[in-house]
Image 1 (cartoon, helix red, strand yellow):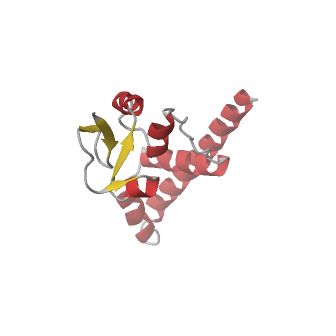
Image 2: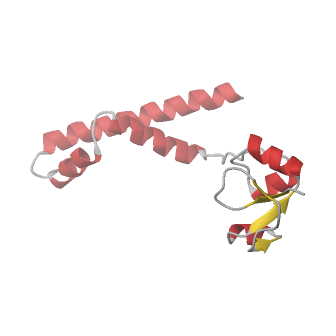
Length: 133
């Protein structure tokens, strides 16, 4: 009689006529690299869903991925940085910061650009949030 097993790191179930050594039964055993016996149906499910977690294989049901919600403050920071990066890379910014007293006009241009990026990001996020309502 063929027996089906899974082992962490494999992308498909393995079939054996006899049980392999190093057998476990729990999710922790699986995490520790032991073979865990599954049914033929679970083996088929795993073949169709090779990235399924241990519990998804055992329950033969994929869980919906949870996408973390990003706060408006974090969205704002990311948008401002992306706008600044369109004009200045991090090395440029650091050089301008280091020379701010020696080259005030370059620093002022950079500073004004950053302030405009902040204003643009705020306006974009306000528009997006109003559209969601």
